[in-house]
Length: 103
Image (spheres, rainbow, N blue to C red):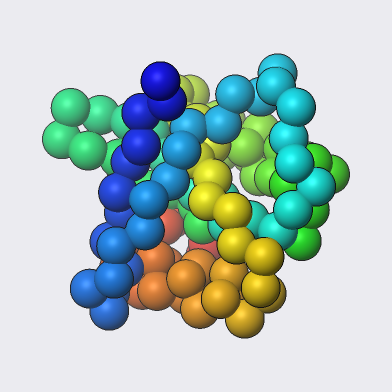
């Protein structure tokens, strides 16, 4: 069973993310993704992104960049078909976590 990870936005909304298995089939669906180091204290979010197509693996270059500085970084995903919802969720997470790689 996949471990689900709850992330909170600045708005107080909670979002449930799943760790991504990089070697499994990925659905060609819109999704938010977070790159984080998973620690005992909880996830340390280093980047928050969104994509129209998770299967296109556009997140991979963000992960490679993150791993240069955060060796244990992993990708967490949450499927969201609607672009407006993805963008609002991403902004909410960035406002709360201030991920260093979102500049």
